[in-house]
Length: 517
Image (cartoon, rainbow, N blue to C red; front, side, top):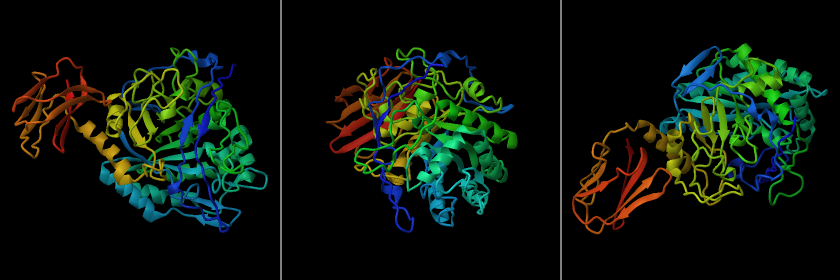
């Protein structure tokens, strides 16, 4: 089988610190995700399996074992993604120390999401394997002297009390990177990914115990196998180092093949479903590039490694398929890999799909080296969530409470994450064809959209005002100065969709959204 080589050159300032007491520096100040640039190499070849047939699922339907959950509620929330990186729940054999969740901090985050109107939080558990699972001297997983299940259930209990669910991500690509003097664990982690005996020890002595204890807890949304596993395979040439990093901290000390990842996902997914048939399972794809078949792409690099057919072909377990997709997006992925520019129907995704990572900031273009990086409009941050709804995706999780992803835009729930949740709820609550009106100050009595006549009507328009109309991606469609107190704008030439009207008067800006039917 031919291989697809994706030449990822990633610039991400990972700065991991540890002290003599193995206490970590606060990771809330770390740019974990960073920027990824120079993504594609021209020497890309077609994967012969890209023609594997895929069944189409009904819109908003999850393939849920033998049952189907129709009309999936839109999942609206955030990435936690951790409180203490890799140490929220774990046991350090080296330190003979148990790690328990910071209940006060988890409660704060869960309640904040609930109060903002969100319903889902993505949380990482093993991450790099530093405190879970527990390895024996032979490199196989052994029973932990500490009850992981009890501590995880504490987090899920808080979620259930608040009507929020948790998606538990097991592993990240960091499991093969040097972090916190974890070099001795990386060979064990690699065996876990490549050897059946090692996987079985992990399942028997760790994961199966937790999956059994957690069961179908009302606070659990799904188990997620990996975060962006493709980065630790031959598909990525990134060595793990970040710009400005000193020494070998962050380096990948080893890599595996993508077929190892696919097999692990298939086996682990099947094992979870055999044990808990009513629990959902997914995995976090690096982006559309590893979760979409796109034969129209001239370079033929897009391939769905997580389709039912491919998972079963590589892993051999019929039950080992995903219930829904988790796809991530950052600017380096360009327009072609953007769920904000391409709908779920356009990219032919055959399962419900949550966009499980994206920055909560204005999306500026061009941000990439893609050949398809034609000039496109910048997307205002308050349009990001609504665009995912408009493009028929099934969820949106912003990245992330756990860190500041931009020095100039420190990640703060109230300033950054909460507005995304609220904008999504605003979009979901819009009734098609309903007139949207409000009473504004400073002489503007009423603004409304007349769906029958395709008119925007503004009564008592102040002199000297400027009216602008934008589409959902922030492109200006109309900009005029009203000449009359009662002002009407004919918008019949524009298509169905979400629009934003702005009326500017002196230092005041009056803004409203509406759906044109």
